[in-house]
Length: 200
Image 1 (cartoon, helix red, strand yellow):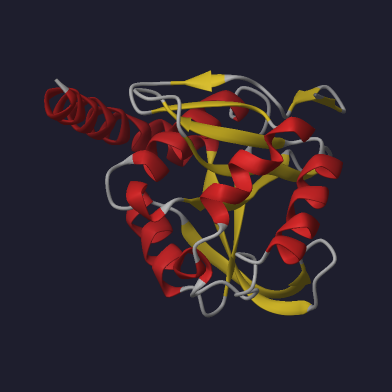
Image 2: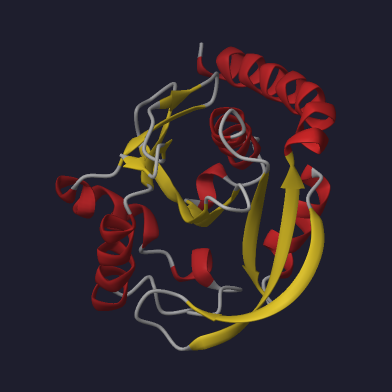
């Protein structure tokens, strides 16, 4: 989808993931990936594994015009979702968030592979990308810090149809991404090769 000239629903792929625009017909497969309580254990809304609560998440995703369905590149299994949102054209800043993955794909490079693809795509059009992480979500905060994002502020915000919650805001600028991306691409290539050997 074009958002003030910004393509916020591209199709992205690399060795580990394929991401494409989320569609209404994806609800059942995405809910199956989300229906594990431990996926949401550190999230401000810990009940998203429940169907009624997840329906709100999905409605917000569809309304955002920037939601992506994420699949395992090797198996085409639906493994999660993410989205672009809150584009500020005057500042040249967009957000990436609402990201989750099945636990089977934690710690294996899929999150970094998705972020790398999303950043590569969007930095042709923006100056910086912000990430909003719940103040209690230590796992995601550590992951972003290892990825190279810098915490820039704390902010109360409400996710779609949910109560206001304290969040930490992290940022990566286009200049910083030019420095960071080489090491991330190398990591994805190594992990992709390792996974390919295991699948043979």
